[in-house]
Picture (cartoon, rainbow, N blue to C red):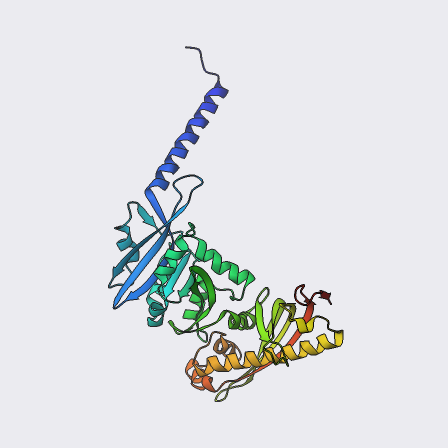
Length: 370
């Protein structure tokens, strides 16, 4: 037999190694299922859990399969679901967990603590509350043939909608830290379509109530940048119910502690630049003077909404804005018991400087850049 040149032997060895490596990877992916979304619901005293599994076995094809089970424990989801899967169920890629509203109202502390201790749970995990049963929401999202659909929906609404920046690390910070409460996305279905229906407010570890998508803008505005968020407000002075949609181009919020308990007082100083969208026909042509007046009126309206929102949360003992934490950072010897005993009597003041950077093209029929 003729001797094989060294270069050819090296090429053959590299090709064989690549082939073996490819075969090995295919064998692994054929033997595991990747849980990428999960749900928790209540069924009487039992916990019903489900996972949405992404199936990527065939190149160019994806499928989302739903596995579910029931248990008297909240903490044995994976072992029980494993019995229903023909492959090893891996949850290191878990990126979305949805709690049914009834389940969340009972408290999610056990789940948070279990996830916090589990090294397989990623910090990129997103949490949410479903309006009704979370399992049904998971099943609906599975029809999109994409196990990551819910996470993408939530994160898009954080970037380009009214949801504030949320995530697993933020939830843990709010849960374990003093002076703040958990906020999660609130998901609904409308005619089979999944939508972000606002934000879920918690008291401690238990779901308390929801604010709609419009009011969620205030959360985003007061807890960080509200860029790309939008807010619908009644047109000042309009008798026929006309409204404006303002889209935030940039914003900045500062808090100031005006007064300590027993009657705490906090002021919100807000600055934002906005784009007018969905402009009513009555505003087809406006002068600079009229726009300046509109800016003042919209600023006052937003200030009243902010004051009402903060006061309403305080009366209900909810602190999604982290006002207790803010007061703690400004108060020597701050105690949660003292602050929250006086919290329902909170006096909230807001001063809003709003500037209309431009008006959008649409019903107004023109575009004004300033």
